[in-house]
Length: 112
Image 1 (cartoon, rainbow, N blue to C red):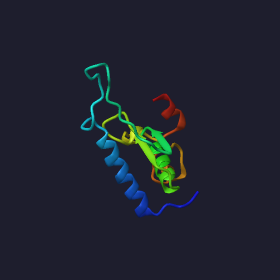
Image 2 (spheres, rainbow, N blue to C red):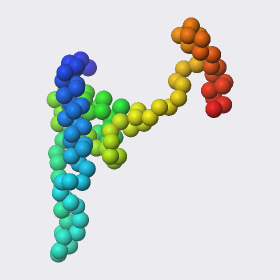
Image 3 (cartoon, rainbow, N blue to C red):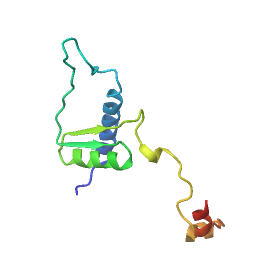
Image 4 (cartoon, rainbow, N blue to C red):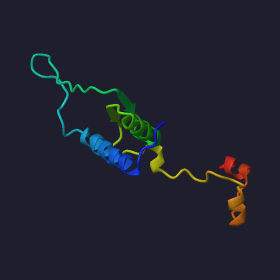
């Protein structure tokens, strides 16, 4: 795996964000036309990533950094997936928490 420069990674993220936002309905409309024909938007890519959450964005950036033409699809109006939400405590009984006086047991977290 090649390391991607910080500027390149940021550029790819912004390009993908604008691409996903651009897919939000202001483009060509799909549907029945007179005569039973329908409009179909066709794109070509080396890699298609479904879901623009943390993993999807990472996969798309990595594929693009290797030279692949990537299409990133997201069903929601915003990218980020579940990484956009706070999920609560991810650690319990860690040395840092003990040092800071945070006393949360593993069993206490499992019960919540």
